[in-house]
Amino acid sequence: MLVKKFSLLLLLSLATVSLQAQELHPLTSGQSVEREIVGGQLHDYQITLQAADFVRVVVEQKAIDVALVLAAPDGKKVLEVNLTTAGGLESLSAEAAASGDYRLTVRAAGGASLAGSYQLRLEVRAAATAEDRQRIAAEQWMLEANELRRQGAKTADQAIDKLQQALSVWRELGDQYSAAWSLWSIGVANYNLSRNEKAIEYYEQALGIYREVKNRAGEGTTLGSLGSAYSNLRRYEKAIEYNDQALRIHREAKNRSGEGATLNNLGLAYSGLSRYDKAIEYYEQALAIHREVKNRTGEGSTLNSLANAYYNLSRNDEAIEYYEQALRIHREVKNRTGEGLTLGSLGSANSNLRRYEKAIEYNEQALVIHREVKNRSSEGVTLNNLGLAYAGLSRHDKAIEYYEQALAISREVKNRTGEG
Image 1: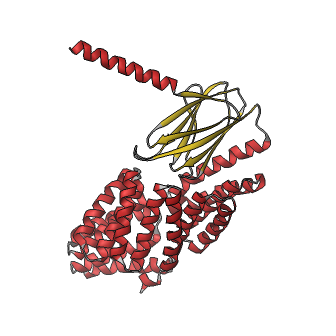
Image 2: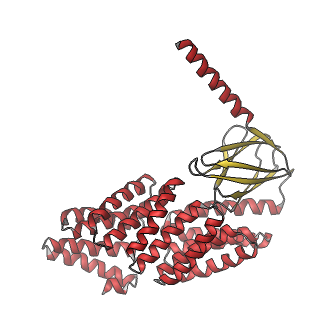
Image 3: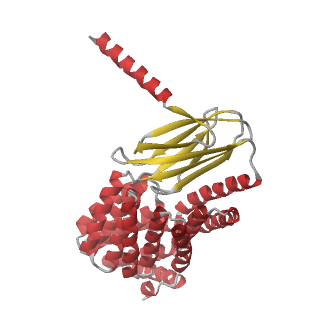
């Protein structure tokens, strides 16, 4: 009986290997392919290239986010691209370093419950032109800038420099879509530096181009970004207006990731209006989507937002429960900025419950991270919170030390509320 079971398993394994081998689809220059795909699925293609050939793959993502990975004949990864989400375009350009069969993998994000499709177009030339090399360089700058932008304020200026270089190329080549993405990304980098008015300028330029080229996904993403910038400026009604528009477009494009992010942003705007119960409704919807699409970073952010809403309703025990969940995820995804903010929030919630020693412990951890990531505003807030915790222990001299440090930073960053 065991022999029969083993034989059956062996046959199934061999059949699976054979099936996977058959799924390596050959691609030729000028070919266009449209296929359905579900979250977590991989589609592999074979592209035969000669050394010095220029290759470009453009993929239109329909209702699902995909990444493109190009591997050399020896199996080593040449390039990976994933700059946009569902409804957007991904472009991968490279110059072949060696002759042979290259493997292109299309990898769908999210869980198996997500379904969509993509249209892929391949272009190969025997030798790269000057414009082709400009494109390769600009796409590389975009990838590098995207990594820098994800690190927040400490690398935002470096990201802007690379994006400005890319933008010049896209304007020269007349690539409107890539120019719009670069403008939007410059806006995000300025947003990370709390230059909200500057961010809005770039977002509005990007929005105009996305509408001109009729790219609804880019339009939706940019509307949501405008909403976030207006939230930071405390213009919450304006933020809700932009996010409502973004939500309609994301749902139309079946962009679940964008929908989740926008629901979270609506929650933030309603929190800004002190409508915390309404905010919680949006956060809960956002949390469900983040979990569906396996967006751990978004899940951590929304858990933190939910905790903030409960904190503002003076439901501190519930707030701590959500903060602790958020903290675990921030650490898992190595989001140091999020980790620092959540540690500070845990300190505040414990202070509210008169657990001052615990509050000091959390705020001291938060202070280390804020200084590491050069977040001066949050550093000032945390120093003030440490003062409050020491005051709660009647250690007033120690409290004054922290208040004085917090005051100096509030004046430096022009935080009149914190200064007062």
